[in-house]
Amino acid sequence: MTADDGDATTEHGGDDPLPRMLCDTAALAALEDAPAGALWRLAESGRQLDANVVRIPPGRQVDTHREPDLDVLLLVLAGEGSLTAPDGTRPLRAGTLTWLPHGSTRALAADGQGLTYLTVHRRRPGMQIKSSGTTAPSADRTQ
Image 1 (spheres, rainbow, N blue to C red):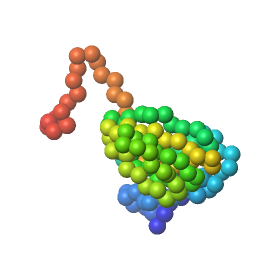
Image 2: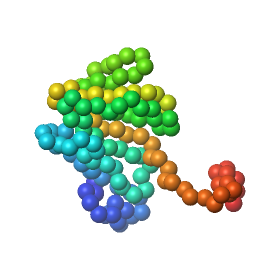
Image 3: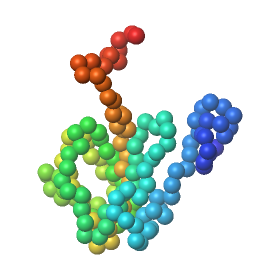
């Protein structure tokens, strides 16, 4: 059973969340005049993951960067391009699923059609503001 909109916990009268259809990635990937950047973001409350559908226009790139904390899965939805890492350059095309381990350095480039891809990773914790000199309680300490 799938809840397409509304509160996922009240659609069926119970307290358990239901699976939900979130977007049509094929339709997003088929947009010819899609802007650069995120075309869609996972924004459901209570989620443990972050996900984005990202578009790199033809001939453009995401410069070399490193993600120190999170593993990322990258699935190419449309177009072609390349992934450059310290050990070389690999082609990316629709259907390619790539694991980008935390700490890895990489750059992405789109070829003549552009590149549209889905990324999925663990959700980053929200920013916490603490008083100076105060430490957060240990997670394994009984309160």
